[in-house]
Length: 498
Image 1 (tube, rainbow, N blue to C red):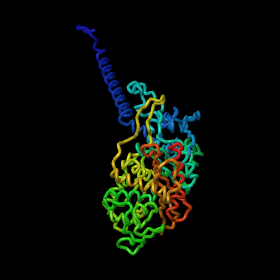
Image 2 (image 1 turned 90 degrees about the vertical axis):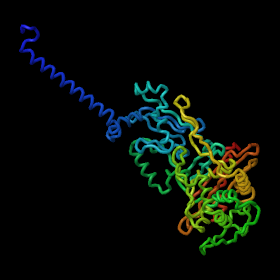
Image 3 (image 1 turned 135 degrees about the vertical axis):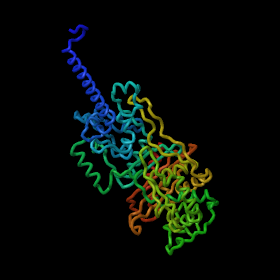
Image 4 (image 1 turned 180 degrees about the vertical axis):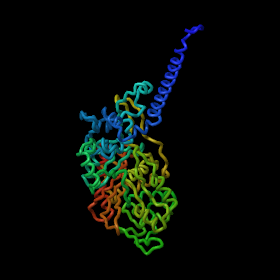
C-alpha cells in the first residue's frame, strides 16, 4: 500500500476498468429498455396488426362470444371446437335473422350487428369491465356481453313466412318510438356456414358470393328500389303542406293521358276514371296522371324538401349498421319531376325508408329515427348501454298527417289495398308497382306500405313496408295489393297479436 493508504498503484487501473464496465452495462441496460419501449409502445400497433402475429386472433376466440337476443331469447351461440381458434359462432334460425345478426367468421370477419356490436360481443368494450382499473393491471379478458334487439319474433317469422323464398324484403317499425320490429330479406342464408376456418367455409363463401339470387344481400336496408306509387304518400304530403291541395274531394285539372311538360311523351294509367279525378279517388286507385301533375304543381323545391324531411338523400342513417341512402333527384326538369313524383325516374328507396314514410304518417307527421338495439348488457344481464332511441323530427304538419291517414285508410277500405284489411283494426295503406328495366321490360316490383291501429288503441302500433321483386301479376297497381299487401297484413297481425 502507498504511504497515504488506499489501493496500491497496481489496483487503480483495475478500479477504472470496473467503473468503465459498469457504465457500459448501464448503457446496454438503457438501450435495452429503450428498445423494449420502442417495441411495446411506439411500434405496438404495427406488430399487433402484422398478419403474421396470430396471438390476437387466438385470444379473440379463446372464450365464448356474447349473444344477440330476440324477445329475450338468444338467436346466437358459441361452440367449443377444442382447436387453436377455440370457439366458433353458432346461429339459431340463421336464415331468419341473418339480415340482423350478419355473420361472425374466423376467416371473413363480421357484418351487421356482429360487426357494429363486436366490442360488446367479443368482450373488448372497456364498459364491460366492472373494475376497469383492475382489468388494466391484470389484463384479464372480460366475458362477452349481450345485445338485446328490438325485434318482435312473431313479426319476423310472419314476414319471412310471407315472402316464402321469393326475392324481396320486409321492414316493420313502431311509429311512436322508431323501434324496428321486423327486418327480413329473401332469399337468405345460414351465417353458421361461414363461422369456422376450414375448407367447407371457403367453399360456402364462394358459393354464396356467386349465387345469382344474392342471398347475402340485405334487401331491407342495402338495396334500393324505385318505390313506384307508394311514393305518392310523399307527393300528397308535399301538396297538402304547400297548400297546392286544400280539398281532397275537389276535382283536379288532370288530363288522362298527361303529356309530360316539354316533351311529347304521354303518361297513362292502369285504372279507369282518372281524368280530373279528386286526390282522394286518385290516391285510392293510384292514378299516375294526377300525381305526376301534382308533383309538377308543387315544384322541385318543395317536393325535394318533403322527400328529404322523410329521410331521402340522407347518407348518415345507422340502425346501428349503415343503411343505403334512399334518393330523390333535386336537379330534375319538369318532365323528370313528374316521373319522380310517382316513384319512378331516379327516385329510389329501401324498404326501411318506406316503412319510415308510413310511420311518420301514423305518428302525426313526426318521424322517429329507426333503431335495432334496445340495450347492451354484461353477461350477467346488467345494462351497459341503454336504448338506441333518438329524438324525432316533424316531417309535416299534424293536419297533413291526419288527412294522409284518411287517404291511406280509404285505400284499404275501398281501393287497391283491401287485401291488407284486419277485423277490428284501422289499417291504412298504399299499393305500388315499380316499373324497371330497359323500356320497363322487367317484371314489376310489387310494393305495399301500411300502418295499423287497433280500435281500442290511441295511436297506430306498427308501420310496415313490403317489396316483392318477382311479382307475378299484371302490370297494374293491383300487384302491390295482390302480392305485397297480404304479407304486410300478416306482419301487422303478428305485432298486434290478432
